[in-house]
Every structure is written in structure tokens, then in C-alpha cells.
Image 1: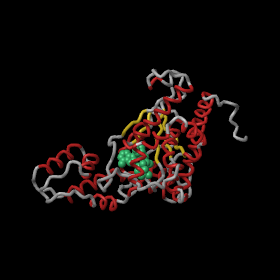
Image 2 (image 1 turned 120 degrees about the horizontal axis):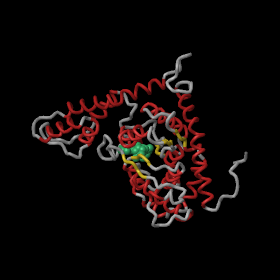
Image 3 (image 1 turned 30 degrees about the vertical axis):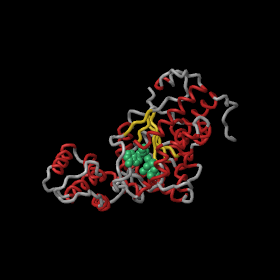
Image 4 (image 1 turned 60 degrees about the horizontal axis):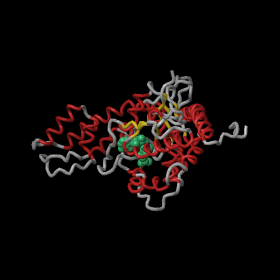
Length: 367
Ligand code: ATP
Ligand code: MG
């Protein structure tokens, strides 16, 4: 029996992933790796929307993020790692889908608007920046997935992706506009209508307390941070209490982290203590929180260190397939995903083009 598919991914705008990724999407990916046929995409072309002048950085970030995937426990033997720039069908689908989305709808997309503001892009961002939202529809639909595990910030993009798939199936596959989304594929649509799967924490706030934790906003605790760095970042959280007996604002970032990273009972105890008017020292709570986060990250750090260690001659490698160590090992994993990903994405493109009356001949690409 074929398993239903998942597609999700990350943009290499920084050297690695953070706790927001972990609770927003990685946890779900890990949990669903056996139940679903998973495709995890590195959106390296989309990184050029904000880093076009830094191609080397994007390349290094790509390797860093795949290392984090491996460190967290995503398994290239069970799931397919997809490098966006090596999947030509995605670029072609992006162009075709761009005809199905009103320009003004893209420009009103709340996720894009928030990003333009929080990343300070002003009005000088490239045409490709809003275009990435259309590209993301192609990233997803190229793999015809049922589920897309993402954080809440991606909800508007997934909505757009669903709209594109609905419109495509209605326009080109004869699917009636009364057919419910979940029955589109059965009714002859090329695309199933994918659903977002939001993580345990829909939107983890950054240590600055004002924005979502984000790679690009200098407010993240990275999965590869050292124990000291993690504790330092936690210590930098501002609770804004007037004294050690004052209550804490329930919306404060420290409270969200307590609820997210400490056991439920302990979190309730701490919140009750803060509300009681008795003395609570933020420093003690921060030390406990830092220790809990460090315990969560310890096995990831260990696996990452093993990945980064130079290969020992004759030693068994940490990954099946007899790969070398370090960056070479990561490149090897990336290359192994490309073939399988292209097989699926090419099939999607061929089906889509046929539905659009563009099926003029075999796709030989010069061969
Ligand atoms: P950038 O700042 O470059 O946009 P990012 O930190 O937002 O980077 P992305 O690569 O854009 O990371 O997002 C990857 C995935 O992680 C998406 O599914 C996104 O919804 C999820 N995610 C990112 N940040 C958070 C967060 N703070 N809380 C929950 N989920 C998050
Ligand atoms: Mg983002």
C-alpha cells in the first residue's frame, strides 16, 4: 500500500534551525516519518529572495540545515530530502501557477506583509520576494502531498496553495466546483488539496518577546547553540516585573517557554507561584528552563558533533550507505534525494501539462 505523502521544508536563510522550527514543525516530521511518505525540502532558491548577493552563505546554510535535520533525527533512509534548485519541475510549475493567483491577492498575503515589515525589507525587495509565495505552492504541489506540517506563520501560504490546487483541478481537470476539497483527487484532479498540520506550539515567540522566533531576526535559540549560549539567551529574557514578588505578565515569553519546555505540572506550579505574591526569583526559573532546553538539545548536539567529526579511516559511518564524514556526508545525502524527488515532481509536471493541453511530446530535456 502506498503511504500518503507529506511535504514540508525550510529556507536556508541561516546556518541552522531553532527551537521554533522544532516545536512548530520538526516534532511533527519526526513523529510522522513512518506513517507517511515524507519529502523535506530545502528552499535554497527562495533564500535568494533576501540573500541574492550571498550565494556562498546560502550554500553553507543549506549544508548546515541538512546537518540539523540529521541531528534532530530526520532519516534520509525513510524520508526524501529535496534540494529545490535541483528540481526543475518546481520552477516550471511556479510559472504555471502564477497564472492562477491574482496579483493583488499575493500582495495582500498577510505572511508576506508581516515578513516585509519584520525583516525591514522596505520597498526595495526584489520581484522574486512576493513570487516566493507562488513558488511555495509549486514546492508543495509538485509532490502532491496530503499534509504540510508547518508553523502558524505559514497558514496563509497553505491557504493560497489550496486555492491554486482547487482552481487548477476545476479549470483543467473538470472537477466540479461543488466537489469537496478532500475528494478532488478522487474526482480526477491532478492535485490533492493539502492540509496544514500546525505544530504543538503554533508560533514560538523569540527571546526578544515581540516577534516569532525567526532565523533572520536575531532572536532565536538555535539547535546547535552551546549550553552556555542557550542559558545566556534565556537569561536575557526581560520579564518586566517590578519586584521579585510581582506577578508575571501571562503573555511574557518566559511563560510561553515554561509551558513549552517544562513538564505540564511543573509549569502550572511555577505559574501559580508567580501569581501568589510570594517571592519568585526569575534567575532560578531561568536556570531550570535553560537546563530543560539543554537536556532536549543534548542528543542533537551529540549527533551533530558526530556528523562534523572528520571521518576515521576504516571506521563505520554514522549513516548507512558507507558515506564519508562531515560536509561530504551531507552532500551525499542531498544528492541521494534528488533522483527520487525528481521522479515524483516530473510525473506531477507531466500530468499537469497534459491537463492544460500542453502535452506535446516526451520530456527528454535534450537527451
Ligand atoms: P526566516 O526568518 O528566514 O523566514 P524562519 O525562522 O521563519 O526563517 P522558515 O524556514 O521560514 O524559518 O520556516 C520553516 C518552518 O518552520 C515553517 O514551517 C515555519 O512555519 C516554521 N517556523 C518557523 N519559525 C517558527 C516559530 N517561531 N514557531 C513555530 N513554527 C515556526
Ligand atoms: Mg520564515
